[in-house]
Amino acid sequence: MLRMDFNFAEIDAILNARSIAIVGASGKPGKFGNAFVLTQIAMGFEGPMYLVNPGETEILGRKTYPDLRSLPGVPDLVYITIPAHLSLEILRDCGRLGVKGVIIIAAGFREIGPEGESLEREALRLAREGGFRIIGPNCFGIYNPRNRLTLLPGHDLSTTPGDTAFISQSGGFSVHLARLAKSLGIHFSAVVSYGNATDIGESDLLRYFGQDPQTRFIAGYLEGTRNGRSLLEALREAARRKPVILWKVGRSEASRRAVCSHTGSLAGSSEIWSAALAQTGVIPASGIDEILDVLLALKHLGRRPGKRLLLVGGGGGLGAYGADLAGQEGLEIPLLGADTDTRLREILKRAGAVVANPLDIGTPLIPLPMFDAAIREAARNPSSDILVFDLALNFGRNMVGEEGLNQATDTLILARKESGKPVAAVLYSRACDPEDMKTEQALRRMRHRLLEQGVAVFPSMARAIRAIALANR
Image (tube, rainbow, N blue to C red; front, side, top):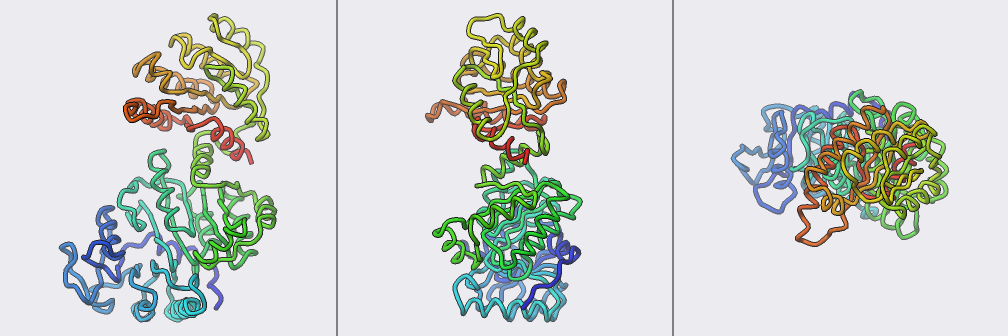
């Protein structure tokens, strides 16, 4: 049975649901129905939340109803957490009541073979007949901090609304990315784990977030699709409006087998996907870390921020390494502007400093007045678009202490504001033993302050260079 045409209002009513029912809610720890109730309570969902289980009268101090028909109101959204073969009667009730949307968490549909595929077709038929839409099955659902709806398990996600959307065929990756993003200051308009995509799929969600005024950036994890033409049209349409980052798996034979058994999707060949994505204006990424790096680059450096880098750090080797990485990614390391060169030579009158691009300041952190003057001057260099500063934090902390790190942070923030140019900081530690946790804490504090003030922060030079290159696609 064909899916319905894209309808923004129908998807919006699900993502911004004002009331929900959880079918299969449970008071027994270890069950999906229990975990999901706990996550919604922890996040503080703002509307009525009805718990449905004919075997219980109260769960976590909340009244429980035997079925959907006994609810005091019709929920906008129904979460079905019971096994696949028990879900069809619930779907019939959803149609009778006029529910707007259903999320089916359970696996056991198309991905297990013909029997599950038949069950999934019947679920879709009931949705069409009942006039509601389905997300899933085999998914974790929706995380939307605007109404405090959350994924399973998503009790510790941020409650701050943001401007980034993430769509994912994998439930695990949807939660993983949302958790990591929280520590990087990346907040979401919504995250949608959509699983088998029997009804609402990747093309619908791309179109939705492409039109959603709350969303500036779209990222996605994709295993495969059942309608390649529709997907490419949706990608092209969304990428014309805002940056789209896509992680496509299923490129090797083993990966394609895994994709088929996971969500029952058709992965397609690596060559076909690479060619198709190149035509749509989508930014390709590989892995959760790379998606987050690109999002940081887009947020703090901008789309196509420029390819001319000025690399700064303490040590000649790291500059040579960074220059090699930049060359491999099609970025440039231009000569310093003549005036900048002259002024930096006046500032860096010390043994070990090499005034050039890459700029070697001699040690990870030099005397702070000299560091301040050099970084602010380097940021203004007219022949470069972006300043990239490298700091091994344990060495820097040993040299200038916590207060010195705070002052260095202030300098990077000031350089960003004064120059009007993007600044990226590469922060990492070479101290990895349990007793070195103070260095790790200092790194996290420094990263947090820099990100708050618009300086992109990366954990390695390789990831910084790669993210800048992808942001320039």
